[in-house]
Length: 211
Length: 195
Image 1 (cartoon, rainbow over the protein chains, first blue to last red):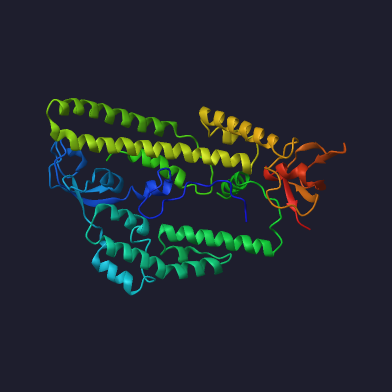
Image 2 (cartoon, rainbow over the protein chains, first blue to last red):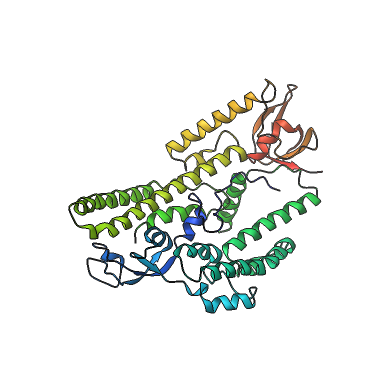
């Protein structure tokens, strides 16, 4: 296994985000349909479709997850967040029927991540959402693991295109394990290699020459 | 919407998943700090008004505060992730970084790298029973004392422990002690040839 020295902060598990994780920051950038339950004076410009100086109560707009989490209060005087379609009853039945058929990349690349974060907004459907997330993951995991352990030296883009980000990360982990094992079998595990800095520089130079 | 520039910084790093260090985005950082200053000033003004009686401004104050926290989070994550990449360079490449990489680091990062090197060196000196132990060597378990290497570029003369001087000319092959050439292999000067 190639000794990778760069270990980024991993995304959080479940409903907790990791403050410094780049993945979690991008995940919480996703937009959600919300409805303001109080007025926000002097912030009318946040709603592109209106010209008023203030943001009135009852405005339906989209706000990023991080802002929705920051403003949401259990007493519900501030914001109410609408559940995105993918986590609603209709789609939940589809996922329960056959989780393997669904293109989770299209359903928002952070399906599991965003779903876990939605649990912060005290929807009455929370238990069902959590159940569906778990069952979908369980249903799909076997195939993801299988593919990652058996796709050696081939183009995996068709396998990856229907996976969400969490599954993609698991897939890459599986692939790196597979590649490490194969290189050990070939006796290449003890071969000293140049650092990734040098290899990337070489790749870029070759790309420049080819252009 | 606020905090778009901050998220762009994060995206810049997220695109390079293999640990490459892009140039330090001083411009981007300055723009985020300016946005934070402006949000802070607006909130200061609104807080004073709220204290004077306009409690309806409180939701807006909270919103701007969330934006400030978000910008802070993005910047901190950006700077921290860069440090992780720079730290990885010490382990993957060596203690002297090539000029094109140093170019991508801001002055504070260069200083941080220097301090990190010093800490690591002090630690390595303190272990191994008084003699010190270079833990950045032998990252892969060694199979032999001597290895076959091929030179990938001209590197000039190279002296090994018994005094012999070897000329490292492009495409020449040599049988050298492993501990002498590990760092040259990492830097891409030599290539380890398996027989």
